[in-house]
Length: 151
Image (tube, rainbow, N blue to C red; front, side, top):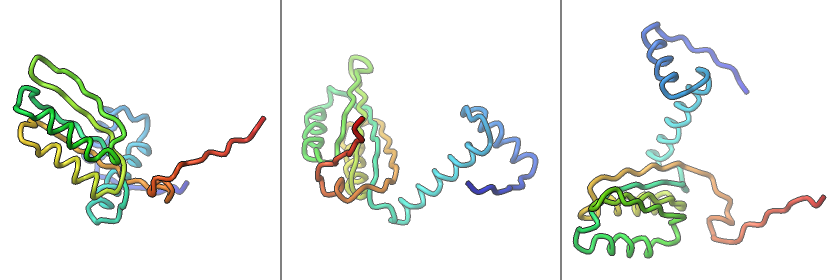
């Protein structure tokens, strides 16, 4: 691990310390590393340098909306290769929350997630993309073999 030194003016340092404390960081280094990782990941996505990702997409919708639940389910089935899991929660009599875990080529995952949120009748939605480097066998859908030592 390499050590770097930063100089911050007092007000900025105080804001950073307060932010780190609010978010439960035990030290400045870990807080700074997480902020830097997040910024670099966002830049990889924005620059088109990330080819694959994992993601979550969460959205709230009224299940009484005409055919909306059916349209959402059909879209999920149409993209079964990207979907890892779906959590469906009944918030009240009318509203449901769905959160999906996705994995695959970043452009396809992003387009699918955004299409769910843009579906007529979806009230709120958010996509969280995390770029990842995947083994070529995972990209091609080949089985992944773990070799474990025998005792």
